[in-house]
Length: 196
Length: 196
DNA sequence: GTCTATAGGCAGATAGAC
DNA sequence: GTCTATCTGCCTATAGAC
Image (cartoon, rainbow over all chains, first blue to last red; front, side, top):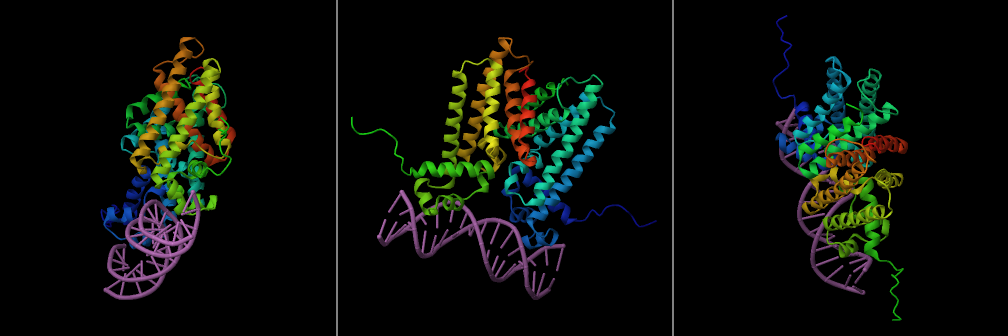
């Protein structure tokens, strides 16, 4: 078949809008950026943005949807690497560290802070992100403990919450200190919490 | 001296403004409330607010200032109770749990999420809050370890960051699940991190 | 101290031409 | 798909009367 399936190198405006909006949201939050910000950066008009995403809440929902899908893919890749539980936790922390080193925080972490002001569909999507990620973490923790590679007491779901919340909080704190190293140290301390 | 030093029961409008604004900020964030919101709740006009606080950034600074002072007072009260280190950590967690049970999150935690959009004086005040609180926590942790009441490895400052960030993050996550109990469980898991 | 009135800007959003 | 033009509403802020 001569017809190439190579993705168009061309604009794909919707994706570029998501790229810009995602970065703005991860730095300034959902309430901290506007259609005007995105449009200016892409050198198009606000009206054009409305063609691709009917409103800001739809853009926000698309943002979380894509972010969650990519995050799930990252977790699946960790699953596929055949690591032991401590290795999986370390890889999990690395995802967060890379986001932070890009000057961003977790999209759903910053949206969680704005939770009470978010449109309902966005709230539901954020909740789902944490449920999914917490479930993955709890599974890793439970398996690691069963195999003797991890040591902690209590419900794996609670330990998962502590690690997940700990990483989200550590990211936010790291920005107030402009100190990436302290994030790594705090993350390391969190993992020691479960014997990793 | 016959002139009573009893504080006026009267309005004290500035304090009432701070009370309302503080609650709004702890629920919706700095970017999530307006002068109009505060004014409507107090049944005064926006113009009156400007009489007491020149602008929103000044109001925000006053908010963080009062919050930090009260928080420091709470820590001083813990110091004065003659508890052992684990008891002090438990009391520290209780402060957070009480805030959350009131449907709020830590003022400086939510401001940390909005950090990049805050006026510079507000940013500095938030940074100071975490530095002060982290210093207090690290001191408790170090003393507890020296006395054999706590067991953890590494720099007490790193463990302090893990606990502080962990509590801030756990508060934000708890709201997305409307589940106060899970905050308590996560906090408990964090304290076990240092042997408490 | 509190008000009315108003300014000036920016937000999200829509209609309709091209 | 992208534009210009426009709408409506909310925001912070100020001037000046009471």
